[in-house]
Image (cartoon, rainbow, N blue to C red):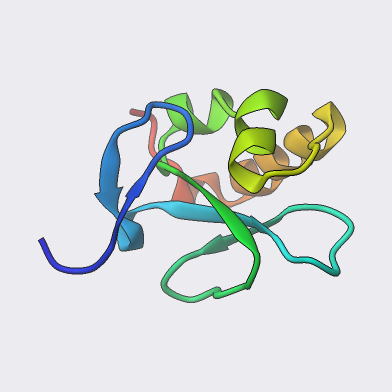
Length: 95
């Protein structure tokens, strides 16, 4: 394996960073930011999730709050899931 390994915050399995979606919360932002690690590099604490429906739907306030080390509200989690679901064909598989 080449490249950094990261752990999915939902299923806790490790994978290469390029195969995961990174959710960050930059210091100056009002809410979390979703991006693909290969094309969207944003500073700040990050949470990694598999691009699979089972992992995306398992995101919750407790998991994201722990990973990002700040309080994440239910509506913010719903916003993150909505952003991921908008591009479902491109990002999320039905696994």
